[in-house]
Image 1 (tube, rainbow, N blue to C red):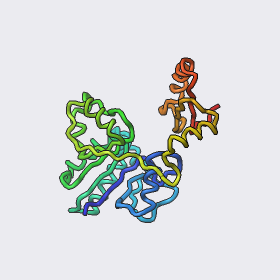
Image 2 (image 1 turned 45 degrees about the vertical axis):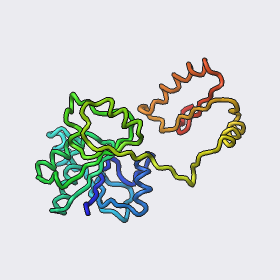
Image 3 (image 1 turned 120 degrees about the vertical axis):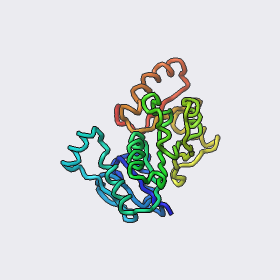
Length: 241
């Protein structure tokens, strides 16, 4: 059976808030199939998985500057695992950090073990993220792209002329002990309880970081609400007034 290696640009478990880091926290807290995690030092460790900790040494800083690649320590750690398990097959999982896939592919080819490795990239965005003019063979570097929705897959297919890798759909999981779909009657009752009866309700739910776009949403909302008074926008996750 192939050994599964997860490369995480964030320490796992992650001490701050994050969507996919929380997903892996839930997964790794139970019965999972990951053999190794490559990441920087977390505050605590999962007891049921092997770690390769990326240490920010002076030598690594020098090598990163010379080679002009920030994630070099992750490639070193991956090489070390392969050396420790000669002759094994590997599934290498990467979340969102898509540029590292090219470096991984190149390293595996150089080591002569690319045929023993299956590279998966989990993309937690929606729209295509790679400029093929700059990286013309990017999707040939991986074996599988895992997307959140079928709509995202459709957008990717329509955007690229060359799209050779396998694609899978893996939606975000929901804790059904906390969240469930209300009936139409329950929805109307909730609107009534919160003084939103007869209104179309929109929800923005995220961390309030610039790339999440709350400032843009609020600017757009002023115009939407001016023309449609039967609407309301609920902001969840932001501390600003």
